[in-house]
Picture 1 (cartoon, rainbow, N blue to C red):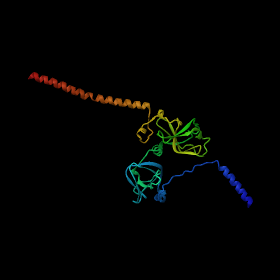
Picture 2 (cartoon, rainbow, N blue to C red; picture 1 turned 180 degrees about the vertical axis):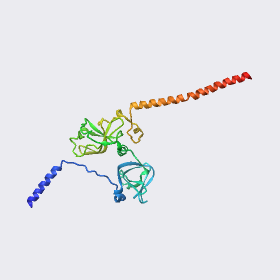
Picture 3 (cartoon, one colour; picture 1 turned 120 degrees about the horizontal axis):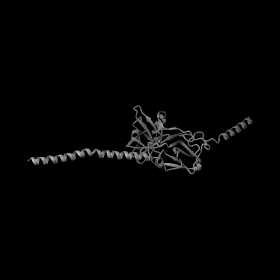
Picture 4 (cartoon, rainbow, N blue to C red; picture 1 turned 60 degrees about the vertical axis):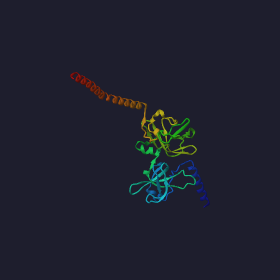
Length: 291
């Protein structure tokens, strides 16, 4: 029996050594601390945790099926919603969570109709809008070795990005995990490809979830030479519709032509008015002569 135990111990030690070099990240989803959700999680839809602005003062309910108020939210507040529930009448409810509460602030988690919330544009909004345009990642970034840094964008042409030092970036050869470096690719209107990663992992075990790399210039934060996002300045949802200099010139010429056409449209009424004045003067002179 002793010999058997020794053999088992040695086998277990070798097994641990054999698998110690394989790292993995488990996908964990933050779930709301809500009794209705815990009882009905199979009927709730996970939409990723997204940030919404409250559009009108509303009550938060402990359950979307009962009128039992657990708190209140005010117009202009921001809430996080990760799960929704659709009742028999087709009303969609969101389970709100306030992740950034003050230490002594009472929890206001609860359910509210999604029609009373307005989504603040984020990477998941972008993915929803462009779902049909996404293609599977096939190694476009595998061999890239950055010189100084890698820039990760919240979504294509967003105003927010993070920088990773070059020495902390993995190539396909050095990537320690079994899955691909990235997940999806998207090409903008100017033909520039963006690479999306559900989870980017850098050396030092730093993790960046749901970011994009701009393939033509992975190390640059200035993308103005690659196209202009026509909606970013107004804070509207990015559509991926970009304007080139040629398109801008064409639009200007079209506008100028339209104005010229408008000017020409006034010529006929003006000529008719002048003709009427001349004709009236002639008629007056004739009438004076007869008198």
